[in-house]
Amino acid sequence: MAEETQDTGNLTDGFHLVIDALKLNDINTIYNVPGIPITDLGRMMQAEGMRVLSFRHEQNAGYAAAIAGFLTQKPGICLTVSAPGFLNGLTALAHATTNCFPMILISGSSEREIVDLQQGDYEEMDQLAVAKLLCKAAYRVLHAEDIGIGIARAIRAAVSGRPGGVYLDLPAKLLGQVMDADDGAKSLVQVVDAAPRQLPAPESIDRALDVLKGAERPLIILGKGAAYAQADDAIRALVETSGIPYLPMSMAKGLLPDTHPQSAGAARSLVLKESDVVVMIGARLNWLLSHGKGKAWGTAPKKFVHIDIEPREMDSNVEIAAPVVGDIGSCVEAMLSAMGKDWTAPPTAWTSAVQEKVASNVERMAPRLQNNNVPMDYHGALGALQTIIKERPDAIMVNEGANTLDFARSIIDMYQPRKRLDVGTWGVMGVGMGTAIAAAVETGNPVLAVEGDSAFGFSGMEIETICRYNLPVCVVVFNNGGIYRGTDQNAAGDDVATTVFVKDARYDKMMEAFGGVGFNATSPDELSQAVNAAMDSGKPTLVNAVIDAEAGTESGRIGNLNPQSVVGKK
Ligand code: ADP
Ligand code: TZD
Ligand code: MG
Image (cartoon, rainbow, N blue to C red; front, side):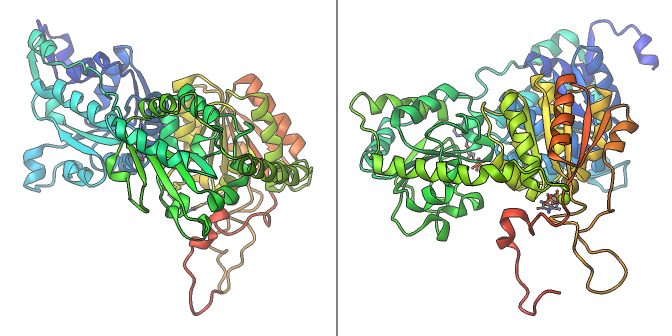
């Protein structure tokens, strides 16, 4: 490039302003796929000491950025090329927004004048218009002197209030724009207090305490917003001081250890049905909680206390008797101090009933988890992995699939906050490898990705990325030869059934192709050995876990959501 050898004096350009603006705001990791017009941006970022991880598909880079946001409270950055790269990243941006994870999708774009006249530029698309519908905020920067402000706005929009996805459009022309270096430096913005604390109104705390004091059968539900908030000590203190049983949502598992005496995880049906006052902390009453009503919630009248940073979440599905709007740390601390010394624990009739139900359910499950059947069923295989996580509580577990997800969520206990990362609010297949990569990169902890064979297929090519960066990721593919099961039959014709894959596939060989370690495990003992070896070595590993093709059920635990044909299904 001729420009690099020219004497540019004290000039800067769009490329460098983007880099300086990100670094000034302590953003140093980028998840990307290179190409026109951002190849050089990635190179220059790397040259300036940023970590730039290249993926094989933007969707996976985007899922990595989304979960990086969840883990760090800083926006995860996904960088893509224009139109197709942008669209590939967009699913992840929408996923981040849906899950309240802070993320910024930065995409290069073509020449605006040509795009707006629809004259057919290289990768032409009105990306800003498309993105707006699917994220929390979308911005385009047209002048180099606005890059500092543009990035500051994107960061603040992503992390303040309810976190979410932000789109930042950087036209190719902008990156090459030149300006005086001193003026450029002055145009940068260091965002002060990007996610300000939001204190709850005192009267909202009084109201919540009044509702809670009258409870006979109170319940706390912790959601992934509570995990995101990193108010771990305050939340634990609230749970323990109150003596109220709690139910963790999937990604809130481990906020308190799942083996905690107040955990109602193994008595979910009972506590949802029987509770009379429910305190929601960073969880929404969406489909995952049956919208707070109906059969799952039983007939006992209920009152809800709802702690959330988003005021519009209140009354979204059912009436909220005591809305507490603010950041979780501040709200939980305020509740705790309002409880004071004269707080009385809930009636033991209730807490013992919950504990007894938990104990009997755990006891009933235990022998099933110990089975050494060949081929493995979900219980035998997950029993082996349960022990591994117990012995390695700082490992991060990534989990996707249908049966593989639902069984793993209920069987594998978590012991530390933010160690379980999964498909989130939408139940997206394909988050697996991007999530595993970001988890390893952002935390340095070992990662165990437990993947249905279908789920794995959505992002499987990223095992090359895992090998390339030599990340401590062990992928276990629960290979039952299909989606839900490997045994479906086509009612007519020669094609295999729609849910069935190649029989006896060997996913472990894919890992070997890139220099990683592959294992084929046919029994829980073999699975244990392979995963322990992987976790000890920290080497990229894929274990093909052979699961009985008949063991699963349609759609795992949510088969009831499938519409039924009145004519009957073949
Ligand atoms: P889950 O799926 O685990 O039930 P959801 O994603 O439905 O959790 O809910 C997370 C909630 O947490 C969202 O309503 C979001 O507004 C809220 N939230 C996220 N971060 C914070 C925070 N720091 N303080 C308060 N609420 C938060
Ligand atoms: N596409 C996307 C992006 N997300 C989805 N959730 C689906 C399709 C539909 N789907 C599920 O909800 S689970 C699943 C699909 C395709 C795969 C289940 O098969 P698996 O797990 O092999 O991953 P089990 O253990 O065989 O059930
Ligand atoms: Mg499967």
